[in-house]
Length: 371
Image (cartoon, rainbow, N blue to C red; front, side, top):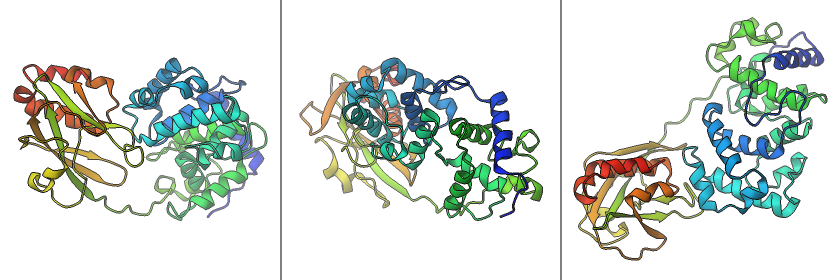
């Protein structure tokens, strides 16, 4: 780790001066000199996990339109929240978002607590999010060390230890530089610096307020940091989705268990997702209803955080009957249900391949019902 010659106070002054001139305008961000709304900060931070600012903007506005306060969100139906969340992925965030809104309403009278400790006690709020809310919404000297922080401080101090091993050291360096004056603006300034100047590839060093003191820039290795430990190859899991359609054109959906991947979301019922090759005879017992199942051509592929998924689709015309956790949905009303992206892919594939004979003419046009 290479030292830098400038004192923390001067580093912070350089950064805040740059931020005052170049801060991003974001729908959840307070105007200069204003205090951010804690509900907006919390909502945006949850949405921004694993998602880009450009993607989050419209979702944030939609949520604020639907549920202007945390009390409104707490009173909302979970299915409505999951439906509004479609496309953001990582649906456990949406379930925890709803639980957290209820906890804030029930435990704190609809007012977010202003300390990291109290924020950490709420559902779905981890160390980073608690620090971000405390700093940005309440101007507490907290350090929300996200990927932008890690990249900026790895370069500022030329930390060559690869991630994730370097995370504790980088957080300590960032915390040591967190000021008592304007800590919220400092946190957002580092985020903006990482997002617009100190980018993962081709950092714009000449435009950086920390150009002079940056140790990695002086050593000519800014673009190489932070180093990362090579990721393990993701395994591939496989399964068969069961596209069950009635004569009147209703399709069977099933709610997944609340816990686990895609918990609480609606799905086209499928066999277990396993790494071994899957055949229809081998998983026939997992079909949700009895029918003359036939395999459709083609494959649906999707990638989750920890594995790739390959689904083939079996289709059958069946009689409508009760199914545990299941619901029969007319094709033109599929868009009313909270379907995760992988299941939208299954629906699209099934309609394209089986629509003509299993769903009636014009099935392709029903794709427009999916948001």
